[in-house]
Amino acid sequence: VVSGSSDKSVCIWEALTGDLVKELKGHTDAVLSVAFSPDGKQVVSGSRDKSVCIWDALNGDLVKELKGHTDAVWSVAFSPDGKQVVSGSSDKSVCIWDALTGNLVKELKGHTDAVWSVAFSPDGKQVVSGNIDRSVCIWDALTGNLVKELKGHTDAVWSVAFSPDGKQVVSGNRDKSVCIWDALTGGLIKELKGHTDAVLSVAVSSDGRQVVSGSSDKSMCIWNAFTGDLVKRQSFAGRSDQSLIVKNIKSPSDVHLWSFDYYTGWISSQSGHPLLWLPEQMRLALYTSSTKLIISSQPPTHVAFDSTFLGASWTKIFSSNV
Image (tube, rainbow, N blue to C red; front, side):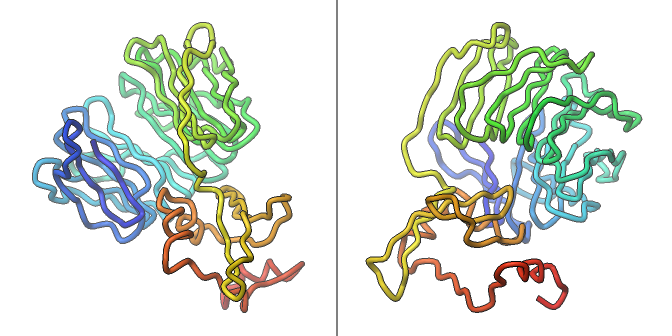
């Protein structure tokens, strides 16, 4: 198993025992996406430091650092033959790289906002991407041309995947839905509803008969890909990382539960009233799986409001001298 972390590391684990096999270090910021090559000999990682790295999974050496993105890299994947890597970034682009030389092969442009998820088709001839602009795009991996734009989601698309035969695309969305699309026509086949919060991850079974989805509602759902019926739902206990326990350090008994929306950057009160807006580069620290430890352990996270901007003045946060 391979994992990426906000501590800037990539770790390879023994799936059977849970032992750490290798820790791959080289990124200078949070690692947002990781994937094995088809033969399992390499690992690719994408980071907030704007780079894509290819690693030797056996000895942990850095094989290639792919540079070209101008913002955080949110998603990476190998092609089925392992010869190429695709990456999606906050710079609104999808890039296809030569895994051997590290050269940029194609830059796919068309999205109007950050690209959260990318994947190759099973034959490697197409790439699918999901975006904050609510669209799912299918691209020709050879020419870089846009083949189809799948429209129907009403909010940011967090995760995309091809079916094993390449005839369908599955997408997970912040609008709480999972959609199955016809990859040839671009038509919506099924909309799977059951989650009560954003769908962060989707995948299709190897036989193409089932779809699995994971959500911020702390549940995993398995769906029948043909009928759209919910086969199984597994809920996981625990507090959502989007909930912040806030204590007033001058009055320890004064405790509040605030909500944090990563997508918009707003921290709100329990009643939904906006309290504080965070720039994108500051949001990840409050959104990772370690958030509950940072917020509730000793010493706690201290937030100073001395330099905040209120009312119409909040736009000053974008000025170069702030």
